[in-house]
Image 1 (tube, rainbow, N blue to C red):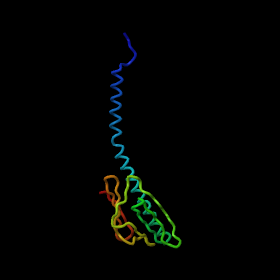
Image 2: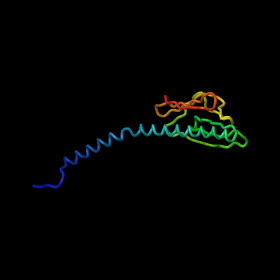
Image 3: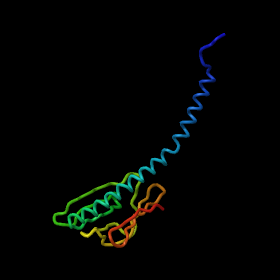
Image 4: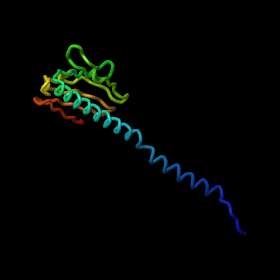
Length: 144
């Protein structure tokens, strides 16, 4: 006898293999999403800081960067008369600002910063540290 159909056992076997494969591929998505969001946040923050520094040099004005712990964001604006807001950002839901040694920093017209220190951000269980060095307005980001 020549049958052209599939049995219930064969269908269940194929479905169980597909479900197992889907479960294995879906499990790392939340961690991968958190890592991508953290990288995107760090890249945006670095871009904004470079923009603030180059704006202060090219326009010969002081530029203030202020991190807001309550509203979970930061603002970049000029310190001149009249003041211009250059950037306002809010942090993604996974990112939180936790107090470091600085919550505000100023870029001078020559591109240097007025102080040095660090700002800390928490992304789920990871700590990201933004460190401003002495002189030339340099900074780097460090994962802890």
